[in-house]
Image 1 (tube, rainbow, N blue to C red):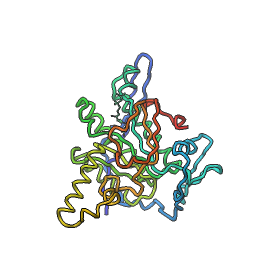
Image 2: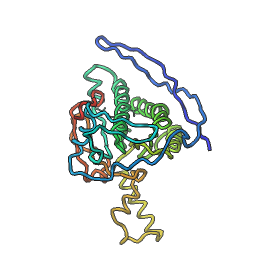
Image 3: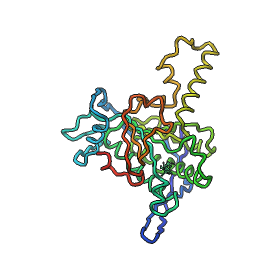
Image 4: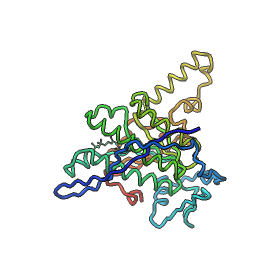
Length: 310
Ligand SMILES: CC(C)=CCC/C(C)=C/CC/C(C)=C/COP(=O)(O)OP(=O)(O)O
């Protein structure tokens, strides 16, 4: 079986203001079609040992900090798909599922006297680096809140820019990571409100990543925790109505199966990171976050560095 994916053509735009010079490698995402096998034959799924079996009470932040310490040089042996960690870093202490709220774009742009699109662009670069780092340190799942069900209330130009930006990101960076690095990929959220083009990009790329076994990147797009819980309740009510399920058999596990995060085997994050200084969860993974630890950083996401995790 073959599918077509869009590959990007990169163009360089250099813009400057009185005190900044921006070298933008904006993805124009022109459509260069390429036929690819559905499952990448190069990737080795192999017998990767499950290094995440044990649970430790040590705080997730410390675990992530340990993982991101500059002295902690984790290496991925792509050939064998085995994560090699430095001597003093115990794999069972690593965070498994990290959830991330990226905030502070408006303030970043305002501080620099730039249009908000610059913040979104800068933030995309940071997100790419973060995905690479999480993969490098053996994080199993990274869920990032890129667009909430409330974000439609932003100015139309910004919404259009963001959605095009996300689609380009999936077609270029995510596709590259899926092909070369065994990344798994899913979008969680109400996809029915997205354009047809966006919906078909998402389903092609999700399908293409289906056989992968590496880190799972979940993009929360047009996502809302209340929306997710409401939809799960409707699905359960339908099953009861159809006589497939008895009301007394509904329990947490049955409910969890109806949530959008059911696409991944470890749906509950152990760590939430929110940048931008706000101390709230903003309708993100409300059910799944029940036992997560929270790390709030005052840094704006476009300024967020690996060192800020330590
Ligand atoms: C392509 C890709 C996946 C990029 C990822 C980064 C990205 C563009 C995320 C958008 C998230 C967003 C609307 C944040 C809100 O900041 P805000 O504007 O509300 O900030 P403020 O609190 O300072 O106003």
